[in-house]
Length: 366
Image (cartoon, rainbow, N blue to C red; front, top):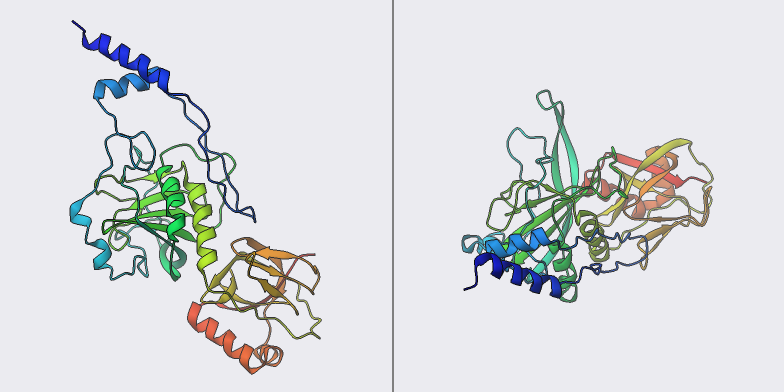
């Protein structure tokens, strides 16, 4: 008669004979500035294998990971996509009353365990600073949708499925230092049989990731539906952020670059810095619509600004990078004269469309 322990040891020997620990293949992102990070690879150990046998778990998900239990799905959530009327990303991310807007800082206790996505979208959210909250000791943040949702092509859904499956609790990537800036958030929305799940990644600070089990009603980090986990995640967050940014930039409308006339030779010496972004076809640095030196152009193939004049001709700046250079404000009559009626109309339209704080003339440092 075979005992439970004997069976367990026999099955363990079988498992250890089948498993060959090795590097996990990481889909290489485009090499035009998108950093591909290598994940740390865990090896199977005897104690873990025994735990799997004792619990009787053999949950291999369709996303390729060894998980427990089997992938989960809440039939009650199957109407979320229909309820959104096709708008998978709300204008503002939901948040609990009285909170700062960032979501929980508590680390997640386990790995999400969800069915693979059938469709995927990427949305960008920008922070709107509210009044100072004395109890919180900081300003309240509202996260506002920038542009619209960019749907991932059918041929790229599997790449996102792999990236989503890699999300897990873990230590921060030592190659990604925590920064003191405040930038955008990316939300990757996965749809499975009508159920929407949002993976929200901070593109600033420590790059934390949080789940929302309904992008329209649940604050990121407070997910509770089956298969989701509340809290913050770090493993896989940086790779998902890079993939989301690449996809969003590729699907965004081409911006119009506003630049001064060919004879412009004045370069104010104030410092101009902030994230270079595109919203509704308008180029911004931080919260300001930008006017550039003469002959500044947009390279659609690389999503970059190319400077032909100014103090650093030949400089290339990529959308999504932190811009740092010189510049300053210019009188309205100068902008009208330099941009002409059509360019000035576009400038005022950008101010109205984006809600920017103002206009700045900027140029890269030499």
